Image (cartoon, rainbow, N blue to C red; front, side, top):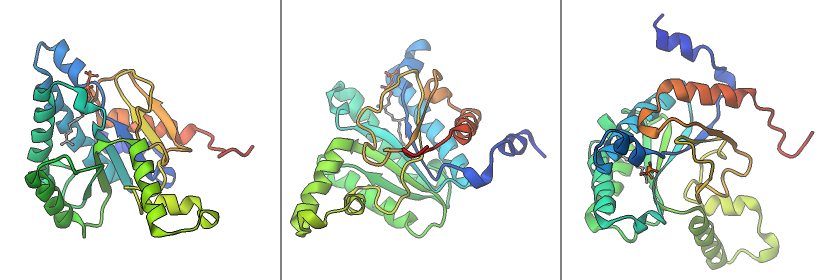
Length: 241
Ligand code: FPP
């Protein structure tokens, strides 16, 4: 048995988080520490995503949602925004090799209106190519904001004509980008920040939060196992006793 398999045996396969959210933070600081441009930090972060998504699929996680570009990230210098978007396009165009393996279903969630037709076509093609896969769903949040997502769900609900008195939480679930995925069980944020930053606000109502000082490009399967193992020690009471 190799070391990797031994470590995986430390987690309880019957009590895995079904849906994990990751705020992939710290790419810029990782690059700065090495005297490199921030763009290389994002590229290193994208490589980490490949490792972690592949690993999550292998151990049986049902859904992984990663924050790649928030509605607030437009405030960054244009060069960095352009770089992030072209990096994403590069990875999407080789999705099967570079984003979690051949079995993963890839979805890009967020408001895609501001992006070019080319990028939207690439997103559509990637989703089509992977939609019949049978493994984990990898949601890549792009131009994503939790409040904007809830607002858009509310608008769609009003348009659908559901009467206010008949409205239930499950209706909101059905209009979110993550429709069909289980609720988020675990949110991971590396790099020492302890905020949700407008990520999956509705979906993580009862999520366990796990933080670490490690910067995202340095995040490994060892950290993922640590996060899952900590999650398995939590006593989830959902408001009960
Ligand atoms: C936050 O770190 C990270 C982002 C805004 C971008 C995350 C994107 C990637 C990891 C690449 C995604 C690629 C694919 C293929 C989905 P930061 O830049 O704010 O770091 P800092 O806080 O150290 O400056």
